[in-house]
Image (tube, rainbow, N blue to C red; front, top):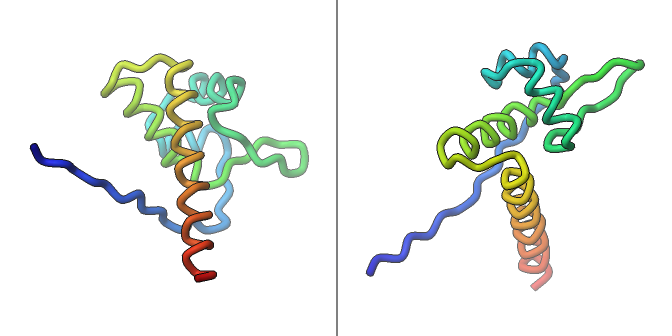
Length: 103
């Protein structure tokens, strides 16, 4: 039996801010769906001057949501759980790296 291991890799994203329509266009989603995902708190906007803007990192998060929904057939409640677990894994990896540097 072969055991596969995968490493999570993060990419740095600049300070680019996107409107909801721009974000939807880049993520290949309908703007109404993006609004729904904001309501469900699956993505979080950055508020600036009373308007809703998003970090460029929201593009990859939306693409992940799309893959989970289309590719695996996971509903939005399940997507929320998966994304929460992924976020926790990232936090644990950062903490692990910090602890390694201390040693």
